[in-house]
Image (cartoon, rainbow, N blue to C red; front, side, top):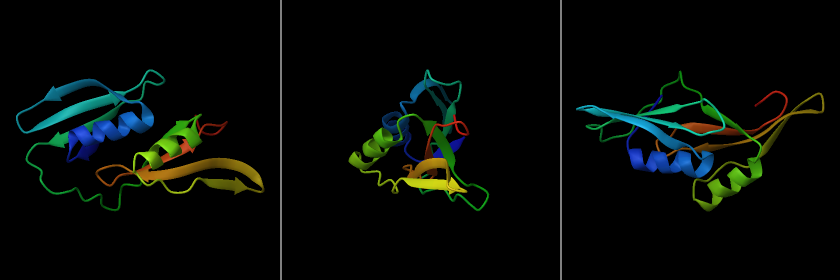
Length: 124
């Protein structure tokens, strides 16, 4: 679950880059819960929107990042770049000259770091 300040902007970000769609939404008096998913996985991302929240959230030191694996790393990087999300360069992680991972990071509208990692034997 991630808390978001601008629900529409967050839905747009996760849809544009990861093709997540609103699966269901539950409205309460002071907040809403919106669940995003796609057909490729049973994974759901819960967005909590507190209606009275006007400033940003403080992520603290217990949160690291979200991660999505993909077969289309370069394509998603290009989407992030062309949409103005300023992804980091694609990086390569090796161990003993063997490729472990190729990945980049992008920041969502609420400041959450999102890692996009290329699918392989270790990361699906």
